[in-house]
Image (cartoon, rainbow, N blue to C red; front, side, top):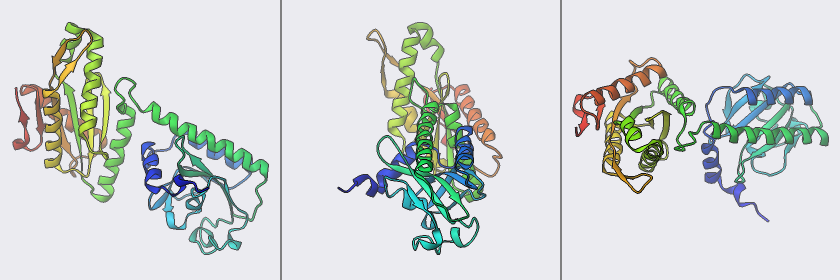
Length: 334
C-alpha cells in the first residue's frame, strides 16, 4: 500500500514550517543528542538535519563544518522518502551517492545511517544522521539506539514549539517572536529582503482590568489575538511580548504595505464588540507603531526600539492610531 504522506511535499513543508525551527540558533537539547550519537555509535559526524525545499539545514551538527548543503546532493532527501531508516554501508558502491560532492569531497562521507524525523501527523521533516568517513556496517543495536534518539529529537521539536507559545492567547511568546524577528533581520542584512515590525498596545487596558476584572482582561487579550491572526498573511508572525503588548512581523512587506496592514488591525479591533464574562460587551481600541527595516537599523534590538518609539508616539498623539516613520502614514481616530 502506498504511503500518501511520503508523496505529499506541500503537506511535509507545512509540517516543517509549523515547527518554526529553520534558521534558529543552537540549542542545548539538540547539541547533546548529536554528541551522544557520536560517542555511543563511535562515528566522527552526527547531525539533526531538516530538509527544506531546496536545502538540508542542520539544526545541530557535531564533527561537520557546513551549516547547510543543497538538497539535491543530500543523503537525507532519500531518508525522508521512506519510513524505515536509510543505511549506506559504502557510499562509493551506491550509485545514488558515489558521485556526490559530499562523498568525493569534504566531508568525504563513506557510510551513513539516517532515521526519519516523523512528526505526530506523519510527515518526515528531516533525519537524525550518523556519518563515517570509512565503510561501515551499522548493527541492529546501532540502529535501535539511533531510532530512540530520533524519537527524542521529535519530542524536543514539539516541546520547543509549545515553549514558544503564550498559553493565554496562543501567540508566540517573547522568546519565540524574537527568534522570528532575528531570522528576518538576518535575511535583510544578507539579502536586503524587506520586512516590517508592528508594535501593538491595547489602549487603557488597566481600566478594563480595574473596572471589569482580570477575567475580562484575559478575554480581551484572547479576542485581540484572534482578530490579528485572522487578518494576517500565512507568512506573518504574531507575538505577545508581555501584558497587553503584542507585535506582528511582516516579511517581504515594505513601509506602505506594513502601514496598510497595521491600519487593518487597528480598524478590526476598533469595530469589534468584545464579549466578556457576565454577558457584557466592550469597545476596545489599540495603538500601533510600524518600523520598516532600513540600513540605519543596526540590530534586532534597535528595530524593536524603533517600533516601540512609534507606538509611544501613537499613544501620545491620542491613541487608537497608527504611527510610522512616514508622516503621511499616521492614521486613526482619537
